[in-house]
Length: 265
Image (cartoon, rainbow, N blue to C red; front, side):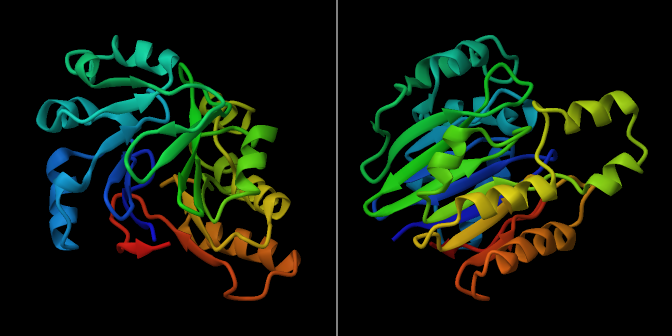
């Protein structure tokens, strides 16, 4: 049995924890060490249950506190060699990342903790490199894909095997195009290496549906160009259109700046 908590999801900071029977993986570290400790205390967990960190990419909202976690906990940080190179030069992480560095090997299951084996896959986003993760624990597969301009075939392949899927639903197209962002920023978001819209997310979910999928979490919602209700309704409508019985797949929105409950997967 896996458990999951999101501490925050969005441009204000991204950080979540996946727990197995004996160990836990922190996914990104864009939330302060103190905040994570406080949220863990509130649900009866401790920092000692974090055994490793995975990093999706080198934008600040995903690594802002990674150096602090490395300094205080000295836990292994797993990601690709390319991303480790970027982290070794980044002002948030350069002083601490070297001692914690663990490289993921491409195309094989990497035994990251006693409970979890991990594979990564690349997704299109305007960072040095951005990856999603397939995380295996016994018979369950947790798949995360965030900060991606579109969903490439390898991401669809992993998503179509997931028991739990975390996928970006960043913006509502009408809100973005009619909003106050400068045109250059709008172009960055909607083009192929930016973010995933609610509609794109919903279409991807329809394309990767399979009998073993139990829950979907929508992540990295924009604070200016989306609402939790719009994101939820868009994917819920796609599930209904695909003939999914109501309640047979749990659908939840991960909020910006606030922690989710501790969820059993």
